[in-house]
Length: 284
Image (cartoon, rainbow, N blue to C red; front, top):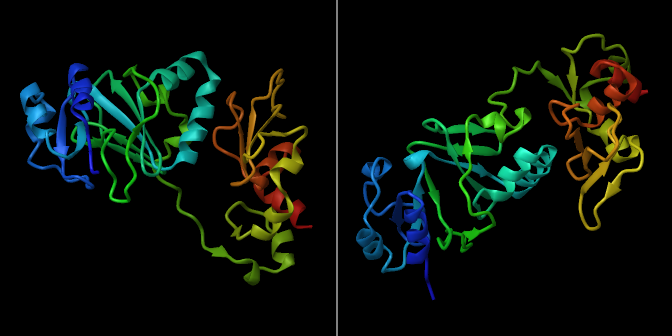
């Protein structure tokens, strides 16, 4: 039986000072023009009337300074969750913030100290003034039901840097020079590279240099692709260096790495080389 958003869910958001509007069931399409609800809340009677029939629902971002961090996939959310363990403050925010499981990832609900803006980063959307976020009980077109995922609070954030690491807030990539494939590049080309402006498809090299084999005592969770070990770049009394064996990326929770490292980056850092010098060594 099709249910959709229950009235108690809509009223819960209402009682926390937020605006909720109905959407057509199995869609993200609002049932009417909702612009006025960015600056005013619907009444309780309106909510009861709207959700007396099966409907999806959305919360209006920006109203009461609501800001929702939308992680496009669960792995990105997991990386973020691991990063938040770095400090008591970020860990508290991550644990206390209201969260919703979506069809692909997770929504994390916060409030901004100032008018929140809509922003887009690779794998992450920031929903601010003028944005809508689908609420629990709603049914995705795929049939997935949005579900509460922990937390009951809406912590106030002064700046995104308080809750997102810098490497997750990259807005654009630098222009890349023309690339050559392995088939187009000879062994001599690799060994004679002398500038960082030469790029090559190095999948063959990366397959022969796995990150977990370049580090000591990596502890991998059973049935998982996540591992931890002591950071090789600082005096690490407890494991703070994470490894993703599936994506072949790694990094330090304590800030030794400003962005995730791949096998080439890690080899270069471990041996005090530039990336180009590392490619030469690994290519041999």
